[in-house]
Amino acid sequence: MKIQEILKLEDYGKIFDKLCVDNVEDRDIDKNLENYEGKHDILNRLNESIGSAPEEKPDGTLTPDTRKTIITTKLVLNLQQKIVKMAVAFLFGSDVKIKLNNPEEPLKKAYQNMLLTYKNVKINSFNRKLAKACKSESKAAELWYITKDKDIRIILLCKKNGDDFYPHYDEHGDVDAITRRYASENEKGVLIEHNDIHMAKKVIYTTKRQSGNSYEITEKENSVGKIMIIFSDQKKPDSADVQTLIARLEMIISKLADSNDRNAFPILKATGLIDTFPDKDSVGKVFTIKGEDTAAGGISYGDVNYLVAPDAAESLTLEIDNLLRFVCWLTGTANISFDNIKGINSNLSGNSIKLMFLDPISKAKDDQEIFGEHLDRRNNLMKAILLSLDVNERDNYKKLNLTNEFGSILPESDMEKIQMLAESRPGENLIDKPTAVKNHPFVENADDVIAEMEKEEKLIGGQNV
Image (cartoon, rainbow, N blue to C red; front, side):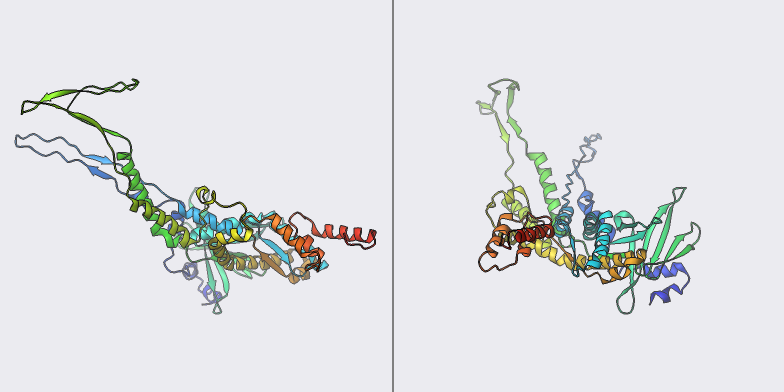
């Protein structure tokens, strides 16, 4: 059904039944968030009971009650956060650059206005928050709005922040409405449900009344002409495919901790009659053992030794190592621990380092399909917002041709780059001077440097400096 047909139902209870439907079957965002926040099944591990209840003896008395509850260890390994943080670092660890593909002079002011707007809302930091929410919950969105003072602001919509959102698609598969559901407290501390329907031409704000199933309705014109919500949906969280592996790993190390509590510290086992124990401060520690008469007429002496638990089985160590390796491999997560990088040769080239991180780099490239489209839609929305506020630059905002360029968090060798540029210039001059200057790692304002170089060349008669 089209959004216009749904709104004709008039009964907003039925309208929200149609609109507030997740397009991914059996998705449980609450469970996804619990897994990310460390509320794992291992915390529900049952405690152990030992001993026996009192039993009646032949003489009518009861045996002692030896029942005792042993609190089992419950260790949480929050690898879900590790997976998400590493993925976000490879995706947005380096700030995204917005390139103007048609740098004509009349468009530069509009372009700078857009960059300034993004800077004011700390867009690079917001990108990381957006990706973290999407990768942990499986979907997230951003809502743009204009204040009374004509300032442009943005908020993050995700389950952790108390928001649900549901896109609605028309017959062509295009989004024609997005419903945001959230709750707020009234003056009495009672939670009030809100459902806001965002469309290109208007926004319908609804507040559920405390009694009955009716709503207070307010409609507001959308002067921007585009839906002011942009969302990303990756269907499932990054850690979905390794949940069972993480649960198995948590159970193993929890049982291993229980075993260590019982057996890791030395246990003294004594047989026979111990006459004297050594003092803890004595230098030479000696146990004195009394002899006992045996039935055969001899004398038997006891013994003192330590009860030592055998080392953990190699298969257990192997399983732990394999589980950790599979978790990283299946999620494209780089295991950048000190033990893993301490043996790396410092003379490795930049390309060699990139090959070592090919798995997380490939994952970041896949993520760019989702978030690259998100950033493109954001740029289009921002152009619409700015041209609705700045009539003088309206045509220039429409003409802006923008590209989002993702960076890399991997370190690059400045020496390699400088050497490459130097070797490309002499002789046949494979690249021109402006290109070399713009790509030099130590040059901050390339245009000013190039202009200064050209001025110096003219002063010395056009000689190449």
